[in-house]
Length: 440
Image (cartoon, rainbow, N blue to C red; front, side):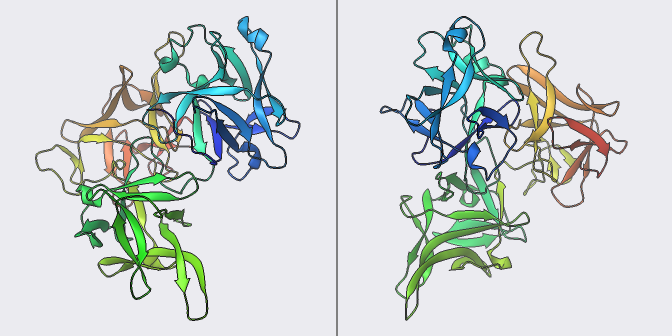
């Protein structure tokens, strides 16, 4: 699947290895820095060529236009390290090919290959947290899909809609604050206390301008809004996404407001304002957006994180009465970071390990029952088997029996060694072991 770069959309370029972002400094140097979501210096346009195969990387700062350029190409062609520079907009900008690595990621992960580079295979590289260089791939592109993460870059929209992040299909469930799901019945929105079935699943896709389309998997149509004969805006479903772009804004807690811009007409004037999905008994209507509990919604991934099954399968093994064996994504309840498994296949690169600290990188783990009360969490990444374990107060890649215990609220669990020591995420790449409840 080719990478889709939308015209006029501002992007940020993130290192997969370190999580930092490409930034232009005031002295026109290019550096890698931590996330500054509101900083114009971390925002870039990707300007396509005529055939869309290569791109110029242009600063989005209107006061100081310019492009990412390669320097010291002659050094790189000799196998030495090259440098990056920031060139003014009137200079001849370099072009870059985006070679996709992760075909399942919503924010594309790719290599940035300098073009035209003949057979030199010059890549954007980050060998240390702030050492941004150009390096030559000695395998001449043959190892692209097995390259180290220092060569990999995530292309992130600068102003995406505020959705729970995923690297898989953007399929979600939308629930009320009581946990009841929005679903489609006879082409109308209604509320039901159930979660299974594709009529309760919604594909929410960012348009690249801070807005989304909301597509129902069951009736294969887009959520939209039209004005009825009484002058009221009502929810409908349309076969195309034309004029069906919704704003999804995260509130201060874990809730979201879902609204669409429409015209409000009064006897004296009319103006455009957001109309929000609003709960009214067992139906969903449109009302002018305001801070109200009946306009607040929970949005969760349909593949969900480690949590209870909605309708337990009596034939399946259960770790707990509300938790069946199967495959899950495991997300920390405090900071929404996922557990992921880094499989190191190259000799001398260190052992494969379980990691945290990421909102987007994640690994699907297999939850299995061990004995009467024990459990295990395992995975297979690039042929490398991972087994999540706790040993001597540390998270290890080692086969052992874990204990899954109910957390403080429904759908949350502790992963422990059975002695009160639980796996936690401390906002870095490293998972830690704390006393149960302390960030676990």
